[in-house]
Image 1: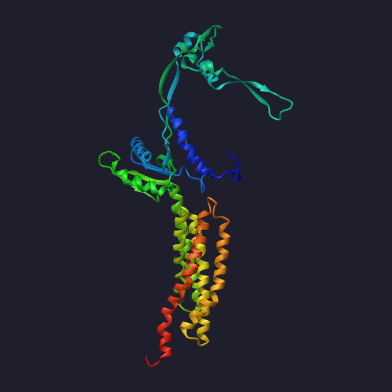
Image 2: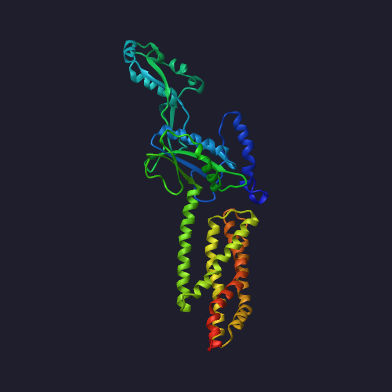
Length: 421
């Protein structure tokens, strides 16, 4: 493709448009072709991964086959595949020692002839003056001369009497199935079913929910049930289990860790505010501004048709400090005016009038700074969270925080103004 500055479409959109035509060509040749894109986050086996565990490996393959069929029928799920090898023919050449002795041929000669025909035979080394490394010389048959089993059987070796002997006369050729790879994860046998997402809904969570509703149709041996795991590998293999992996696992771990980090941030902010204001209730009023940013974040993602990603969560956490700062500006000014003897209502009005300008300037700086990354495919969620959350929470903070603070203090200052009541 040409450089991204010379085209209007992003690479993801181009891949989505190319996929149907490429797969239609592959279908004519019974091939499975995938359009693979560089993942925007940590590398995973595939966007959507179903891991099948169970007590019997052959039955695991059968369950995986049915899950693969369900994936192929699910909307927005593309490039469905599994890591199970088809049967590959395996031809075994066994030297008949009795015949070989009768023909005067050593078994090692037969082995060397067949190996040389298939893989090549070292014949020497070529020393080139202009090269730092010696070049190995290998003798090998042309592809046309080793295209079939009959061609290999017609190879000749020289016996002890100097006469040629056909390889096919001293070996027995048997046909079988080549051994297949058995995948294991944490010492447990597993069958992987892979897929990608492309369409209107590209988050694997939607596909997982749709497939989960259809898992009841999966046929299992008598006495077994298919159990779903979302966050961890099954502990035992005495039953059949489907463990969702891929981008979902990364998403779960990222949001779990970010959620813990967000909780720690709230606790630290709360402790700092308590230490400054010497009050355990006032910090709760200030922290009320944080969930207000969610309104703008949700609306912003909806308006731009973007998904809530890990970078969106990072933006939400970053906004916590900005929003609490706005609340601190308002409440600190109200407290200063109250200490000067100004009535509560008047102090709140003055706080809004005086502190609105610095609050709006701070919000404007955050919004303008986030515009730079608004159209970046990875950090778009961060930009939307910063912009939408800042705009919404700023205006709501100017209304909600003073109202909550007024509600908290009105009884106290009403009694000071009217002691007899």
